[in-house]
Image 1 (cartoon, protein in one colour):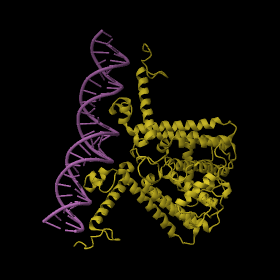
Image 2 (cartoon, rainbow over the protein chains, first blue to last red; image 1 turned 135 degrees about the vertical axis):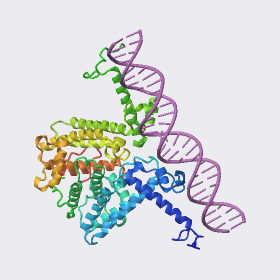
Image 3 (cartoon, rainbow over the protein chains, first blue to last red; image 1 turned 90 degrees about the vertical axis):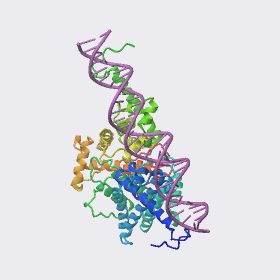
Image 4 (tube, rainbow over the protein chains, first blue to last red; image 1 turned 180 degrees about the vertical axis):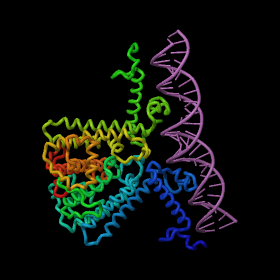
Length: 263
Length: 263
DNA sequence: TCATGTTCGTTAACACCGTTTGCTAACGGT
DNA sequence: ACCGTTAGCAAACGGTGTTAACGAACATGA
């Protein structure tokens, strides 16, 4: 294993110096152990000392790689957002490109599945910021969150654009709210093809409802009595779709969701 | 101030011995300081040592009053549930008893208002259990949560009973789900007057949606771009009410909520 | 009044945690 | 071979929850 002769220029595209490579590997190890601790013991179980112990080194050494515990949590949170976005995108791509309705269904269901199979991650990403210092710099996580939001909303937008969804008229929307929706559409990259604010509004409201059901399920606030929240998710999905004028497609799950005369 | 002669029987109804009185006062002080720390610094800022320091005593002394930090958090969580239930009940009572729709509106709005004015409390009560030991005994908090749920659902139930809400037929509900809804109705004290499972289902779904909007607002997952979430709450409320066949009553807030062709 | 048992709060100690400081040793490029 | 950069370490400071042993204040019965 002779050392590669191309180590002189770390800034060269793609190839990294040996030093940078092992450094990156160490950082990856830190993140992966932190992630495992997060999954196994919750966010409270993530500590620099424990990570270092498991790596066979001491806690201060980790400060060569990470500015502190808060920053580490922010970093892995960003990673998890990207991971979630990828899972949703994969589910979307798994459906036939022309089957708009199915793609939307499977993307939303993928979000739920990822959430309930990654409760610890979901809690950190979508729950209240309880552990971090209130004035910590969480921009990386926010950026990743926006990245996720962008892919998600872009997906919904493209899908909704094909169908003719009934949208609220611009005049009916509070001007203050309109302004907020505009800036929102901007940050999420939605306003490229001049989408009406009504679309942003409808998308946002749909997102809020999906978020709500999933939070309820993951945080288990009905879990002491309801074991399986899937019917509620499906009912919400159905209500959402029909409200959008989109045909509801039952999943492969436990059969029909609850019918929906009131909701 | 001679000592009251009735100190021999602490079990006597109402009157407590002097010792028990100061003990209770100390416990109250502990809880109130803990609560203040929770509000000012978030749940991560609640510590036995800090509380003891502020009380002019040492941390181990608190163990005479509380089994540990987790138990203390559970206790104050239970208190907060009762407080929330009281706030909702008060809002309900503030409306004319015969005005069913208004009572429902003001109760739901009271829930939101309490939540956004008590974000730290709400996060502990309705967010993920992130700080507590996963196998800690949280039954007091669960009981208080059930207490809150009971008053809330009883309120909704009584209101919905007056009106003729379209309910899903029993045959259309998955039997497995029916069983869960039945046990749910039991724990929440809803099945006293033989309410159909459809009612429990509709109530649950409404609750999920209210919970969802409020979580979104309190946890600020749209807060980086949307400053005021009230329109979204009102829109959801309107959609909910009309879906229930109940007239929507606009609040005193910023005027009309968003119209609702799709949602 | 005196003795007794209970309760309260203390100090000391253990085991964790995040973080800073100063050091040593290895590495990498000249 | 030289020398600057970097990785990792030990020590230390202050914070946390929790347990054990002890003393003092208290309430009660003889």
